[in-house]
Image (cartoon, rainbow, N blue to C red):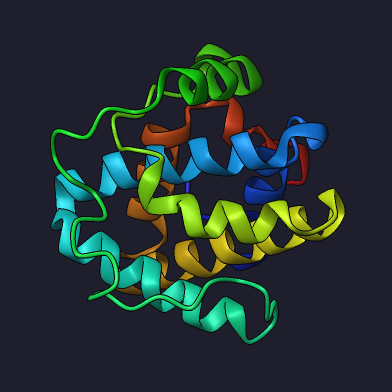
Amino acid sequence: MDTSPLQRQQIVRHAVLQEPTDVLSTTLHLWQCLAQELSAIIGQAGFQSMYFRSLHLSSSRYHFLPSQTANATAEMLAPNAAMNQATSVAAGATLGAHINPPSASAEPFAPLLACLAAQSAEEAGRASIDLLCTFIDILAVLIGEHLTSTILRSAWGDRALDAKEHHE
């Protein structure tokens, strides 16, 4: 079940825009699920490196995205961080039970969410899709298409990957 870059973009677009009026909560939840899944495999530092690289690359297309360095948020994904209950409820209501509940805190993604919140819903959605696609493309180059698909399915659930099946 390998995916092409276009299929990955469709998967991400489908996941981010499941609830177009709540792109921020959806974006947060998707990042938290990816962080939880990938940190178990590549560690928090590995996830941070990929996240910061993706921010750097996407900020050339969306200048309002935060420019962060690994030193700026050394505790980005603290192992015992608990997610704010209000964020959990909002994200869970937005995405439903098909996506695993995250354990990563919302705080590491606060600069991203603040930048997205200052934009129109459409622009925030486009930037969120671009950033996630950039991250996932990097992941696919590093570990391959098949394993990337498996990780996305594990992090986001089967329903989030339905976009691939609708476009084949």
